[in-house]
Amino acid sequence: MKIAIVNDMPMAVEALRRALAFEPAHEVIWVAGNGAEALRKCAEVTPDLILMDLIMPVMDGVEATRRIMAETPCAILIVTVDRKQNVHRVFEAMGHGALDVVDTPALGAGDAREAAAPLLRKILNISWLIGQQRPSATKPVAAPLRDAVQSRGLVAIGSSAGGPAALEVLLKGLPRAFPASIVLVQHVDQVFAAGMAEWLSSACGLPVRLACEGELPQPGQVLLAGTNHHIRLLQGGQLAYTAEPVNEIYRPSIDVFFESVARYWRGDAVGVLLTGMGRDGAQGLKLMRQQGFLTIAQDQSSSAVYGMPKAAAAIDAAVEIRPLERIAGRLMEIFAK
Image 1: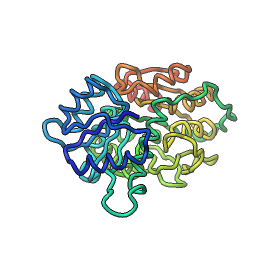
Image 2: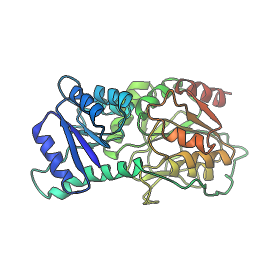
Image 3: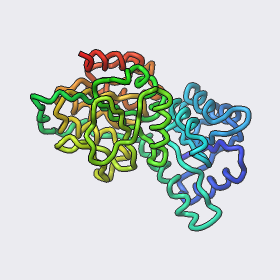
């Protein structure tokens, strides 16, 4: 991949160069010391991927991400030294279209290849995502066993690049006493998942927490997938984390969760696929539609990255295509009857 580095710290730039050197297929095509310089260089030579720092003079990484995604869009991976101090900036940048986040590799001590591995794995995932093609055929699933007595409601939401900001808007539109359970699957590394739950809670006013192994989704709860394993529903309706399937590019996979909802959810459910690059969630959303559940995809004009919703629209997976600001109201119409 042709990679650009945006960072004002020479030691961090050198650490990134040394980490990238472990994979000869990667080439650093330019380095910028701040967001404004990155914006100019990106317009001249757009890379496949930008490794974007957050704290820089002149223009920080959040604003640089916003401007680049609006003017010369390309894949952006946030690289930060202190994720705990920068958690809000991380999710702001992801809200503008950054794909993921990773710690700056610490190559000063120990095994340098091991220290570089998390960064290289993220880059590999993004390279697959950029060129990702999935078969259009959907896997058949058995009809869900609908409970004639139980009337539990579930909103299954998947999002990726641009997702944090989109989730904030959607959740702000729902009351604290929303009568259905909500499960969120956002492409984010597990080391940032707890911070994202806290950020969403403070930003939208609804209590958001990480989903626990074995729990049943309950009305009024907002649960976020919280590990690098996939989250799925089991036959009894409990949530579980699983390493399978191992070949899924993103962990957690939206497709895996949506497919389990189509198979096992026994009440009413709505699938919602929000902004994101790639195709994750489109096939799972189609399976939900085939089982009689309402499915909604975010429209192009309100998406930071119109990839996943576009893929869903292309295979007729979405019953409705709606602007982001009209999705919460639609959910209220369905579950507040």
